[in-house]
Length: 240
Ligand code: SF4
Image (cartoon, rainbow, N blue to C red):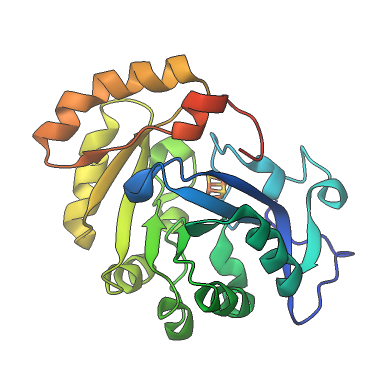
């Protein structure tokens, strides 16, 4: 799991891509509702039990030859131009596995006036050059509900580096209200703020039911709540 297929070759100016899609809306977190172009990169260094994009990394269930491809930065930028995005969201998988290669893409976005958000699981510290090119970090550190061992999913040095950018929001995927105590312990231990809580769910009914249950406890703790707008609009469709 989480490996690059041995036969996938990518040039120096290329990225391992799962999909480039849009225009759509940023569906989660501080920029919810903004018109966006999405670049979803392949590979991940974790294997969360409820992952909603397993086709980016789980080669026990998916064929990497079908799911991933190498694509030049110029070609990705051409696709984004056609979307007329307000923002560009780089997601995955885990985008920071390719952070050196991302610099040229983000320089291209900056030249076109597009702010870039990177969605990361918070286990890899970003390089300084990349930090200077990112408008917003959406850091989704994983809880025990992911099934990933603690020492693999919580990396204090990486969280500290992301916090130090002063442009990070910490978003937690919650399956039940008891998860909030675990989040509070992480927030206190690592000084994480602002906090966004997002119910887990890939259909509108599950998502709204969980959001209603979470709403008052989240307000009581002084945190923010985000739905998943794309799930409310389009369910579990890929590439929306
Ligand atoms: S970190 Fe994200 S992409 Fe990776 S397995 Fe977990 S949910 Fe999926």
